Amino acid sequence: MRTQIGIVGAGPAGLMLSHLLHLAGIHSIVIENRSRAYCEARVRAGLMEHWVSELLVETGVGDRMKRESMVHDGTYLAFNGTAHHIDFSKLVGKHVVIYDQKEVVTDLIARRLADGGEIHFEVEDTSIHDFNSDRPRIRFRSNGQQQEIACDFIAGCDGFHGIARPSVPATAISGFDRVYPFGWLGILAQSPPPEKELIYAYHPRGFALYSMRGPTLPRLYIQCAPDEDIENWPDSRIWEELHTRLAAVGAQELTEGPVLQKGITGMRSFMIEPMQYKRLFLAGDAAHIVPPTGAKGLNLAAVDVRVLARALGEFYGRGSRDLLDRYSAICLRHAWKVQRFSWWMTSMLHLFPGDSAFDRRRQLAELDYLTGSRAAQQSLAENYVGLDVSLNM
Ligand code: RFL
Ligand code: PHB
Image (cartoon, rainbow, N blue to C red):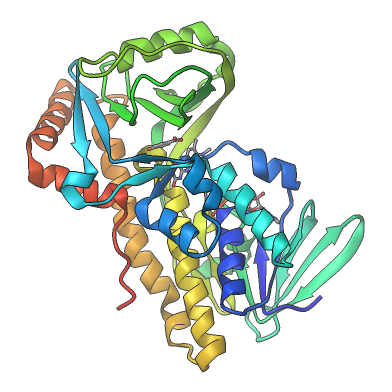
């Protein structure tokens, strides 16, 4: 097989990249080690920055999103028994959009296949080769057969546990890591949401988040120990904890319903520098992980592939390597700002084991300042709805 861009991974990063490249007249092949059904059902993110939803519409994959998504003009911060509203629309004139990542993936797969795109699902033993030459190759097995893709560039969009990042010589990249001493226990339930928007709650028993996937599908999270055993959390205990932590004046009472899915997620910040090695470009979770508190993972993946698609467009269209050579610097400059925001939200809203009474009071003072200051709210809103990406470096 031969293509211009060989893409490893059919998550949001790989699929969006393949779609944007197609619109720019550039051929790509995507390989994915899971089944199509698995990719379309994986429970992950739910919140898109304003510009990402616009990008989906502008590039012709936003029809279902426009019909089925929920536009949120703001969010709530709850602490000391009171919910405070942060109005993004009033503060910065933008909103965020609630649309499940698995629906974005479903829409992108459908569109790629309708456009004649090549996606190979359920491949095994993926490996990447010769990306330090101008003839990179991707090898894998499909239906028991050994296969090879020859390409001009490889895009490593295979997530945090993929093979692309570990294929770079260790001396060529630096990693920056922070593991948080807690996790999130998340459930997807069936019951009417109490509020039209999200509630981020700081509570003496730990952080809680009220989010949603639709008008009758709340997605709820509680801070838990990083090594917590889900077996210790029968549904009744989860609901009890959610009631306690999310109880706030100004927010309606939470309604219980059947739990459709539950799981525990670890929390980490991770970055590598640079995000490129020769003819291998890393994008999305393959290059960086943010703690979910800022709702940024999917959005960061979208930034990377938008920059990469544009840079490859300039390479093939005008023969210019300029933007391609600046890919890593441009994405890292943005990703570090997003990393900072996600760390800040996480630090402000969670209980850290071993924290003193001083630390708790400082967190409450920060929340008090934030909810009382228009300047501070504007800063949160600007980051939350999505910072502009500068192509100048
Ligand atoms: P993905 O989605 O992990 O996709 C990578 C794909 O690569 C495949 N793969 C391989 N394919 C072939 N060969 C190999 N050797 C391969 N190894 C792996 C995988 O099967 C997979 O299909 O990475 P991508 O595309 O970079 O997208 C990143 C996002 O998925 C991630 O950042 C977000 O889900 C993070 N995240 C959130 N982001 C948001 O923007 N808003 C949110 O509200 C939000 N909430 C969340 C989240 C992530 C969570 N978890 C479970 C980590 C909530 C949670 C609980
Ligand atoms: C989610 O809906 O899964 C979600 C929303 C906001 C966050 C994190 C996760 O900050």
